[in-house]
Length: 103
Image (cartoon, rainbow, N blue to C red):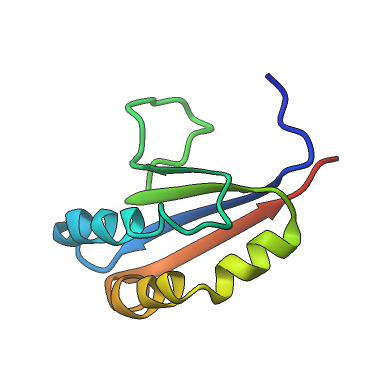
């Protein structure tokens, strides 16, 4: 299956304290009902150990949107803003966001 006409939003989170992983995942799961999201995956590093794989992050979020305007609306959604303020900012030491569109 090929993903076409898709805006991909992939975020990796590094915690200040590894003990907060459950709390961060709880917060990530709050995002699931946001209407602008086409598909969403909340994950943790897989047990794969090849030299090219970065498993240093503590959680990941992959969201598929129909287009950039849906992603923009997600950024301003009150649930997303609550996640940022109550989970991401206080719990995370580092956050890396990678957005991509069809080539």
